[in-house]
Each structure stands twice: as structure tokens, then as C-alpha cells.
Length: 59
Image 1 (spheres, rainbow, N blue to C red):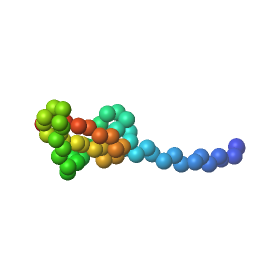
Image 2 (spheres, rainbow, N blue to C red; image 1 turned 180 degrees about the vertical axis):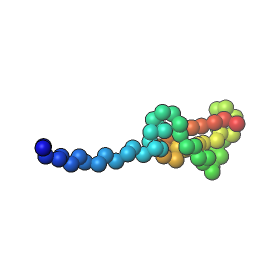
Image 3 (cartoon, one colour; image 1 turned 135 degrees about the horizontal axis):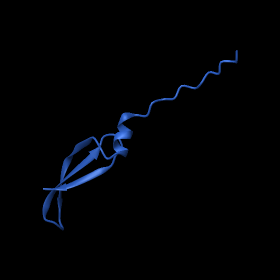
Image 4 (cartoon, rainbow, N blue to C red; image 1 turned 90 degrees about the horizontal axis):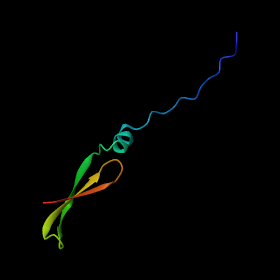
């Protein structure tokens, strides 16, 4: 019989990074509400919990 070769155990990818790469972010509302001078509207800022990407929504 041949020799048994031990393989290194591969760490599974974090589910959150995989989801962010596919466009499914975990958005958290930023507590500060800002006022946009150019649009004249309130602006809500969201941050992704996992990757740090920001999203701005004008109300």
C-alpha cells in the first residue's frame, strides 16, 4: 500500500464576505442624519457591517 498523505485543513470562507461579493450587504443605519445642500433634502447614510461599503439614500 502507499503512504497516507495528510492534507491541510482549508478554512471555510466567511459567509459575510461571500454575501458582500454577491451584492447582499448587511446595511446598518448611521445615526447621524445629514442635510444635503445641493438637493435640499435629508440624507440617510448606511454602512455595511462586514465590508464597510457606504450607501446614501435621499429622503
